[in-house]
Image (cartoon, rainbow, N blue to C red; front, side, top):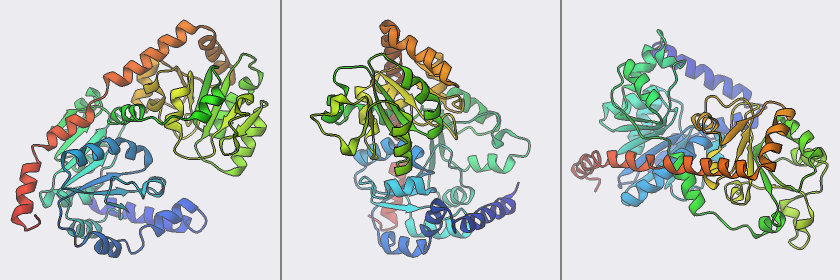
Length: 426
């Protein structure tokens, strides 16, 4: 692949998104969010004279990796404005009012013209890209203008295009970064085999984020009343495929157990289906009354934003997504210390593989497997407590990636300050 093929592929992608937007709401948001975007950028950022740090995330998951870096960057360098961009509507629509960012926008499509216009308007002093974001034209333009670009929480595997015979174009894209901070030594070693030397192992910044979540958890008196001193299973970010496996077992499980379900998507039809699937007394959080809540077996969360604080009350967690596109965040549960269950599609997730290796997590593919594994952990308290200890320790020992990234950036910022001073931006 070369630059022309890459640009054609992106233009084709954009064309297809526009076509799909006629009937697909997310595609429609993707298209509408980019309408007149350069006018909006000029009106909003064009007159900014403060130094600016640009953070880019594909979607919500990458935002969780960027968040601790953004917040620590603001503490260290309060003079800098923060621009946050997203590629996907699922990130932008949920975090467009994120208070720690001065500006939040969709990222215009990665064309040469767009990259030139975007960087001319925004004038970033430094740019950060979370995990898998490798946009050729933006990185090339940043490099041409001597604006350092940092990739962080990146992870690489042998089967990715960078390591194929035909992957030269993408290998060259990686070389445009000032530095790449990867999650593990395997990623660093792979990059060095293709001549990418500006790489360090820092770890995954999500560990720093979940530690902050744990430290800043919100008390939820209604949930404590619901738990009522019993063992509690928190089912987080569940999809219908997850519940098809879990519900038959939970319906016939007769031991004392409270269940909280936080669906990944909250729609009336899904909530109604959940209540029908589970043949236990259930209630939605929005309808809960404190004086009767302890009578229910199942509490269904019908809002967004509560899940991370729910885990503090859990004795077990099941994390959804691994019967479909991919596993959701298991670290939020791990940081509070509990055995963690999830489906079979987890192999691209380093933390899932690690927690299974350390015996704190269990992957299940059928109702029968979940029944066997859950019953064992439920009945053997010593096993449950040991898995909980391992999960909590795993998070604790992997924190610190954010500090490594920003310590490196200290080497860059004096040069950035002098650049701004000479250009009259200070």
